[in-house]
Image (cartoon, rainbow, N blue to C red; front, side, top):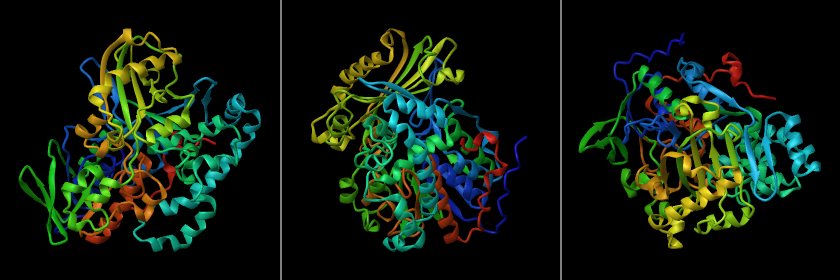
Amino acid sequence: MNAPLATPALKVSRPRVAIVGAGPGGLASAMLLAAQGAQVTIFEKDKVVGGRTRTLSTPEGFRFDLGPTFFLYPRVIAEIFESVGARLEDEARLIRVDPLYRLFFEGAASVDATADPVRMEAEIAKLCPQDAKGFRAFIAENRAKLGVFRPVLEKPFESIFRFLHPEVLKSLKLLRPHSTVDRDLARHFSHPLVRLAFSFQTKYLGMSPFRCPSLFTILSFLEYEHGIWHIEGGCGSISEAMGRVAERLGAEIRFEAPVEHIAFDGRRATGLTVGGAHHAADAVIVNADFAHSMPYLVPEALRPRWKDAKIETARYSCSTFMLYLGIEGSYPDLAHHTVMLSEGYERNIRQLETGILPDQPSLYLHNPSILDPSMAPPGHSALYLLVPVPNLRDAKAQGLDWREEAPRFRRLVLDRLAKLGLGDLEARIRYERVVTPLEWRDEYAVGHGATFNLSHDLSQMLCFRPQNRFVGTEGVYLVGGGTHPGSGLPVIYEGARITTRLLAEDLGLRPGPAVPSMGGLAPALEPAR
């Protein structure tokens, strides 16, 4: 039986909070604020919740994740559910994936990444026997790194003077901010392919391991320490669960309600304009893509740090070319997650950074049907293919036009799948959908088609990133991958906690429940050691 939800506090006048967008950050914010007594309304332009974290369903019975395909570090979202009187495991089923993924190094070897240290050392030894001994040291160091950085990650970072806070200064020795992920990993692993096995995860941020700050070695650490999880029915099931809980707490979700702009009285937000009608609010949370939405939601005069020119010239992540394929038959020998890293990986990265479409692209393939039969009709498979490509702004400089390029590139990536033993794939396709950077921009409202938001280099992190309490306005707050602390589901959920704490403080809401310990959660959510 579900645990009772927290009862919103009774107030003579409940503060009204309007949320733009029902993505993960908006949904988490709605849950937290509704539990604290706010009158919460989410305005969502589409017919479903989730934003990029939604599930696509077809009449043929196939289900695909639109964006994220696995769940990492479930601790944060589990704490959010528990803090409002719900339980994550009552609302969605999480299935641990082992091996985590299969890494296919083109022209070299393949390894099955696993959280089991003994097995993982054996896999590393396939590439470089002497590097196997570096694995446990890497895990121990990054466990300490996450420990010192978590207090920084869990708080707002509104001023450059925050760098002088003792907890920030304490973290610098381990974070090595002027190093890169690849250079940091070289202290543990000598072989470039071993380093690549622990650094390709920077692609989750749309960045290169040769440029990404060394802090982000914690991405691969989180996979090995806390596991990779499949959500039954797709990652959109988590978004749907959050929407259900938010509504049970009294929040309202209005679909097909695109927001035209935020209304202001001077600097103070007074509500939203939707369909020409004004919806009054005491505070507004923006969960829409930052680069796409800010130029029309907030007048430029109220964005002193993020004028139109700065938004246009900021550094953005790469984009992705997507194929969602409903296949007759199954592939039981294909891993749940497969990452194919191209033989010319560094060249591939340089092409992406300069707006050139890779001619030998790396790719990621998701085969969830082997673990979750609900993702495809009986006797069929739902395959999801993701290929990093330049964002639209960088590609424009090279004259790349996806309307012309998409058919050729589709052919190229399908041919590359033959290297994974899928040479017969095309004859078995029963459903197909293509999403290029153009669709990310035009259909899913992603600025420049940059699916991983603003880049995470040092000059666009912490106080240099758009802040949770949006500077220049009163009553406007941000959540999502384009704001502090950054991209990735666990980080976005943490951002929602930061934003809602600030908003509750500003509106005088009662404090939410203390963040609970994980002791009461199901053992399946405990980290594997």
